[in-house]
Image 1: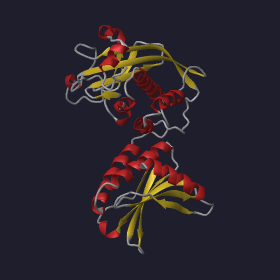
Image 2 (image 1 turned 90 degrees about the vertical axis):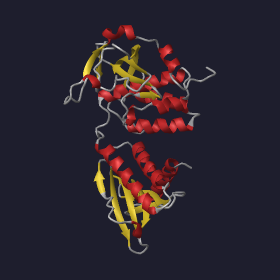
Image 3 (image 1 turned 180 degrees about the vertical axis):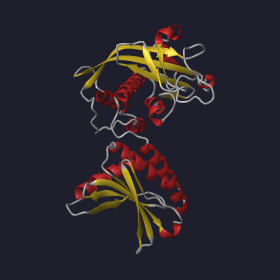
Image 4 (image 1 turned 90 degrees about the horizontal axis):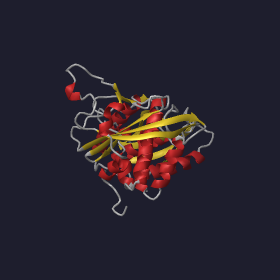
Length: 340
């Protein structure tokens, strides 16, 4: 059983066991290497929690305790057993539940791999540093309108790839935007940046950094542009599109898990309500461009020293000669079903 599945099950069981009395209702998780790992629920509040146990003699000057957006880390010294327990508990702030699950699963998976507790403690320190930076940089207000529209456009392109016969695992693994990549999709040496428009000017897109349209190190770079009508009570909602993709991934467990992970990183949890829930998208125009040569863009290599945070507006009417049809683009991408 995967760590995420074990945690889901353990949290569900302990949630039912948690009575009105204050306390920590927990169960030990199996197969966690040299680390004793527990999952449970903290009452009051029924906050989900994991605990990692290490021999006290393995600790030196490590200090893990901290609190940041979405969770807290507390150290507890067990004087009877001679162990140190590191507790990670959600705090009830606006963090998608799926994201907290991914966070805890990632920590447990990493600390379970080392062969010694000393190495496991070092790994724990690194993972907590990584996740602390991630949560501190994450918005707590949910998706902005721009992020919401952009996420729909990315999922729309993903669906087009799946319909065209690109294998589910390759398609989902290529979705790199939520992981901080410069382009939204990375199919090996081929990359696709996705942009969306819901305003009246279908010709204008916003490029948010100098690397988004930089093909350095790539064999091919493409721009996918979608123009939508965005109206309340009309069209397909973001949640409906994400569910449609789940149905296409239903027979590919690895692809489904990667999809849910990236959705959470993008800030869109399965159980989280968004302010635009009732708004739907209707496609008006879908265009593709090959980024090469004299394509209108600002490259990092052309920017003077001392200039940073480059963003600019691009008028696609100046890029007509670089247009490419969807089928020709998708044929170039790795992962196409050989039987298709």
